[in-house]
Image: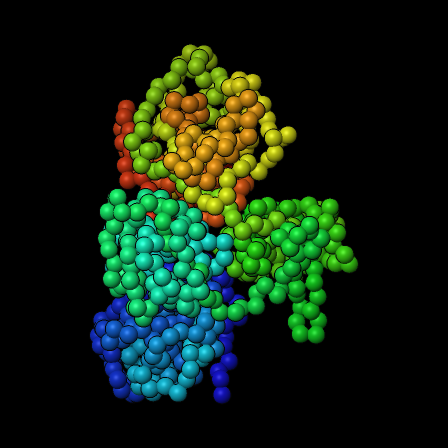
Length: 608
């Protein structure tokens, strides 16, 4: 008889890394519990789809071979033990019946019985290693508390040294690999379905449906780590496949390899639909609620509905990315559906199902009532992807003491700290941290301002149009994340400054021209441009973090928001400033990512 799972609901995400830990001791082939100091020789990881880093199908590596655990007799106590093996403090739930998709290879444990206090899974009773009468349709999973054990460090983690970027749907994207703490792409020479299948399985999906060449999932930036990868298809990791280390002249990013993986059927697309739009890619969002025999469709309150929420809807429906998240949909006929059944929806953008986002639950509260103020989306198969050239910030950073009489326009555009308002104009000066920012579009669609030119605002002082209120945030943070100074860049001249050799410029903002950044081009804000600074007049000497966030309010949809922020260490002695170790947020270890995500630097527009 199949056990009843206590799992009720867990958030889904696209962070498809494999988290694993190794402990001390040795595995026991016996079915009887045997006291051990730990699990030396065993490795553990979470896999499957869809999931977040602290949940998934449990996989164990024994004797060099990865396998799964059968759900027969599985309990929360066993989940506690396994979560500790994985480096988490405890379990909050578990799943049965291959909730995260069926695994492959051996089923290492069956009828696993733990009290929950064991230091290692080897101390729990079972049928014995590799002795099972189950199929992979019975693979067990765990949901761990997102809290690490004290002393757990990255040295205990087997890194996914592989990730997908730029895909419109889960399980597809440009393949990137981690080498020497740097993410890079793979050249498509000899790239085939066998190699693609290794990538898909390594990320917890099924086999590959398609091996993509010619940068079909967008061009990467920076290093190209591998070329001529040759896999049999059975390797546990892409790094186990024979390959050629790349040299600068071997490949270009126009040859970046990608994959499309086979995904298990989840049925999430049946719980949501669009109505009233001009095509299947747009419309008012309708969700299905209720239980068996009482299912009904309803609308979503448009309050605070935005790009991140729209991205989840488009992904859930298999329609790619969100072009727009709409708070008013009066121009789309909703037919006979008039009841609002969901409100207060707030998403991170990584969820695969709208009901995994935070919302008000059964209590509906809308500031603006009526069907005209309900949520809608416009989806697209392609999206832009902005990336800041972090090295240029580091190379160009310097301090300037600028006279106040030269800063009237900057003051008008609120580009100075608040204390400048009480300065003795036009006498005195402000101390500015200046640097250049070069912003590349690596996506598969041009980056365009959300607002049409009819609503752009003319600024007489600088003599240009603003197409976005805030395009970039600049922050100075203390090491613990407290903001001590802030700047911002309005998109007064969003254009193609330079492009790759085979790409033509399309946007030039002079003379009320179109604004945007073409795929394969970049926009350069030089250090000597007004407002390209942070006013640090009131900042005391010390060690700080310089943070730059592009598109901070998510006004324009992108295929990947995780690479929109850059951080640098900086030291200020009261006279000079040293900026070093500039990096994009997700380029470092899991612990660095956790610290990075804690300080997004986009919660306040107040100038300090």
